[in-house]
Amino acid sequence: MSSGTRTTAVPMAPAEQVLDRPPPVVIDLRSPGEYAEDHFPGAHNVPLFDDIDRAVIGTLYARRSRDEAFEEGRVRTQAAIDGIVRRIGELTGWKAPALDLAQCVELMTRDGLDAMDGQLEPAPAEPGPDSVVLYCWRGGLRSRAMLAFLRGLGLRTALGIAGGYRSYRACVRERIGAWRSPPSFVLRGLTGVGKTLVLRELARTHPGWVLDLEALAGHRSSILGMVGLEPATQKRFESGLAERIARGFDGVCVVEGESRKVGDLVLPESVWHAVDRGTALELVAPRERRVRVLLDDYLSAPQNREPLARQLPFIEARLGRRWSGVLTGLLHAGKEAELVELLLERYYDPLYRHSEGARRYAARFEASDPACAAREIASWIEATRAAGSALPASPRHIARPADRAGL
Image 1 (cartoon, rainbow, N blue to C red):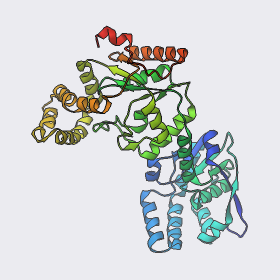
Image 2: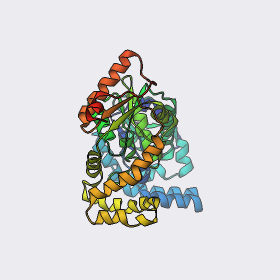
Image 3: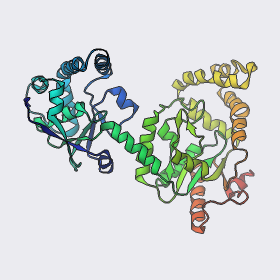
């Protein structure tokens, strides 16, 4: 662990290989804020610097000098190193030797930034079944120094990701861009018919078919769609997409109909192509069923009422001046069913019919019983595939379940 003039080879594997051969433990060394925005699938956050540390060091780097920033980082690392190594040991089952770790950091860093940067030489490596992979933002000194430190302590299976998170991010975007969906079938219908419920029933019985965009986005794709959920960032959404794409699809892709955006998130072109050009299947349900679905979805948890109340004035403004305070008043008065009825009648149904009025549907399914609808849809897709007509463009076909309901 002492300093010197000789170089130390630090093994770094390509992000593509780490994605394709996931190791048992991946550790993200970036700050909690960076990790929360997005991270490698399954990675554990063991930050070298917390968000405040990172801000202080970054400010010193930008306004003073890189050497002052390095010295500040060195001091803060010495203070935190015992906890960092202990946490890595907990994740990996490895036990570090009983040493003064702060003193080890002192010895490793005492010759300064340039000396340490020159001594830690990246070396090509491949991930193995017992690898412990660590990464930072760009595979720079932060991760190389930590890798050299841990390997010097005896964790010889530790290696990094060449290019760090930035390389992983480029890999994600490349894989999404190159994806071509198998024949896609798109569940569409008025708000509240239960498209998501049916899709998740399909995912339960045919997991290799389904791409659940709203689950990946943490959003229901409407102005009220974030209520009770934790919306993903664009980067985290795309990481989830790449992970789902990597698992592959069993001959078809079933997805819920969306606009080009799910909340604030934009669908990549390859995914949008599957949604926009897939075979449209219409789901229908009586108004009372739709009201119940929305009440269960948005208002089953008391903590959802406040964020819902914050969003309703936007819809009131869209409906016109005379609606100011009406919807929020119904919510505060406990008239939730009446509120949902008005939202459907005055806002969601007209909006949907305006955007979807010209769309042609290959089949229609009654969705009041999601499990039954999922079975009917699965049977219809399988029959369509067997007949070799995955993209019917003839006049609208009405499936039996909706016929029985008189729709």
